[in-house]
Image 1 (cartoon, rainbow, N blue to C red):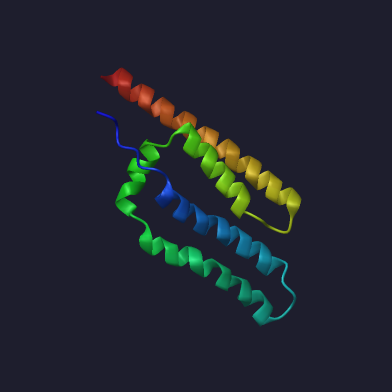
Image 2 (spheres, helix red, strand yellow):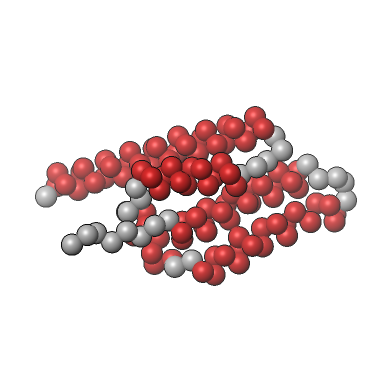
Length: 120
């Protein structure tokens, strides 16, 4: 019997909102003076907010527990493709920080798994 695979679609929807929030913050920071120019970028986040309606929240734990190396690579590419701010140096640093964070989370998950195994 093969183990069920959960994919990462729910995680991507949540992630997309966080990424777009960073993009919008950069757009607001770099906008021309004026209330309208500063508020207009907020509309860019509406798609991601609406996508949250389709998130199956109860599946997030399963997706996380089932998070394969290929899915981690896919998520990193998704992040790099979607995250685009005007400040290239800051963008690079955030992308690199994201990669480090993903590795840390992976190592922490493996450590928890090992401790759980050893407790048996």
